[in-house]
Image (tube, rainbow, N blue to C red; front, side, top):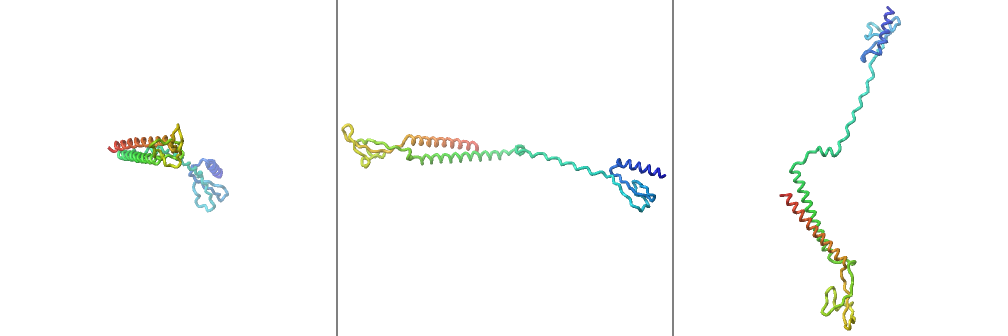
Length: 201
């Protein structure tokens, strides 16, 4: 009988590593000093009983799945619903109106620049000595009564020479550019007005 118990214990011990994950064994030493194993708690035994829990170590929790990368802004824009026809028409009218206002402002600025540039700048002026002829006076700022005029004898006759301030070619070139800017602004305004009328009809 003791040999049978030892054989049973050996079998239990040998099978212990392969016990089911939830298997619980009890180990105790009986009154005869022999180590006993059983899957049930011994009855009518008052000595210490050791519980051998074969519960496997918990498997590690699976790593969280990587969240997909955020969608590109272009994809988000593509997913947005198309604006309705009324919204598109309103946006087009606002764009045409902004173009019309900008063209008017540009023309006003060009006209003001032309008006402000009517007078020549100091670097656009030149002084020449001009001969006063009979009956001439007041033209180009010339006058016989001017103190800076002088009499000279030319070809046997006495004549009056007076200094005159005239605009240089730089002044006329600048004026021409300002006039061209006004014409271009007028053409742009006309086109903007036509586009506005077509857009609101």
